[in-house]
Image (cartoon, rainbow, N blue to C red; front, side, top):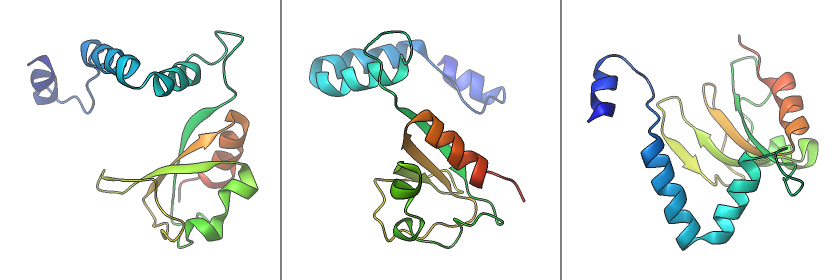
Length: 130
């Protein structure tokens, strides 16, 4: 109910701690290894066991060398040690676990996972507006 009111008031995104907490509890019970992975991922630096992993995004602009290439041609795994886990299309929809033949289009956003410094390097190289 509060989410509906906030959206009507103009909010683009609404974060509900109750929904987030409910999902985390369910994941901890049903998929404990996945829960542990995300716990390590999102608590980076807070524990000695933290993974050197982060999730980032790179929006593909018209001047980007990524535009028009397939994921295989970009070879972000070899060049940056990153894995594309999803692509957000300009309409907001997602392609989860895209195959290597997905051709990157202007306006798409690549969701990548890997070391933080690799994500920053990719952003510096490709996340420039027109």
